[in-house]
Every structure is written in structure tokens, then in C-alpha cells.
Length: 252
Image (cartoon, rainbow, N blue to C red; front, side, top):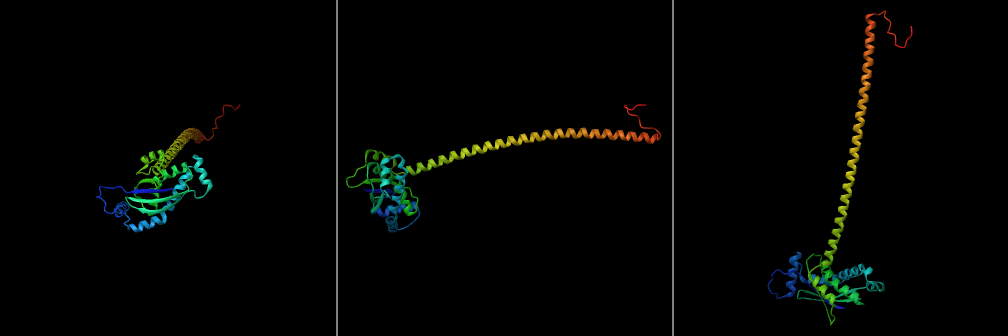
């Protein structure tokens, strides 16, 4: 299947272009900060772009195996199922003429066609090691026309990277929920620890109060015993011949 993938950099009121090639790379260098000559970029695209795009397309198809028996059949028949060749580079913006092999049925055709809108700009930036926002358009060549459903997807995805952005938002959503769950669990653990410490402190305070009462009673008993002994000793000193007072239980 021969396809023309057209990519462009956002324009900011530039004057009409006398040289589309130089104008595109001037805008690209403006947004990327690279400053390379067009021929160097083009040589890098010829070396790496098709391979990077091929890898992204096959990864996307493999991720959808569980949902489509038609796509699964392609993967079971050969590896890699989709192969991409870069035939030529022309300019209006920049136009990458591709020959894509392995399109064996309508399900695979529609998926590849849709994926090109998202992964074409991604493969372009990966090849040139940049991160420039690019709009994308896809055109089938030699009389091949996209299905009606693809026309709707064109309108939705042209000039954007909805699939990567959607995946990023989903990852952030999952991470946020995980952090919220972890925060709630930590809050629960802190509350349980606080309650345990409060109970332990209350038990310790009660034990201290009880022990203090016991110590006070013991101290009073010791003081009474000492006072009794002192009084007895004083009596002996005053009347040495006096016998100790008989206890109430003694007999005469």
C-alpha cells in the first residue's frame, strides 16, 4: 500500500514561501533549536525513519491483538507483520512517500492508516531526536481511498497526537489513584498508631497513679512504725526499770 504522509510545523504568519523545502526546515529549526542543514535531516530520515515507524506500527498492532482476530491472524503468519519503506521526500510542507507491506485485510488497513496519524510525527521526531509539534495528514496513492470511518478519524486526529496524549493522561490518572490510595492507607496507619500510643500513655499514667498511692501508704506505715519505736525508746530512757507495756493479748 503506497501512502503519502504529510507533516507540517505550526506556522506563525510567515510570508508566502518561495522555496517550500527551505521554508519547512526553517520552521522546524526554529521550533527544535537544532539548526541543521536540510540535507543532513533528509539523510537521517532516509536511514532511520522507515525502521522507527515500522516498529511503532507493529507495537500498536500487537497491543490490539486481543480485540481483533483479523489483526491477530497477521501476526501469527509472519514477523514483522508490517514493513515500511521510505520511497521519497518532497515538499509542500514535508511529504514522506511510503510503501507499506503486510496489509492483508481491511481491519489491518484501517488500523495502520489510523496509527500513521499518531505515530508518523512520533517516528519523525524520534529519528531527528527532536520534540517538535507536527500536524499529520495521510493520503493513499494510486486510486486507493480510505473508508468512511477513516475519514472521521482524519478529522479527529489531524494536527494532533491524541493517542499518545490519551495514553499519557491514562497513566497519570492511574498514578494519581495509586497515590491517593497510598495516602489514605498511610493516614489510616497514622491514626491507628496515634490511638495505640494514646491508650498506652493512659495505661502508663494509671499505673503511675496506683503505684504512687501504694508508695504513699508504705511510707506512712514506715513513719508510724518509726514513731512508735522512738516513743518506746524515750520511755526507757526516762524510767530505765520500767518494763515494756504488756501487749493486750498477754496473761498475768
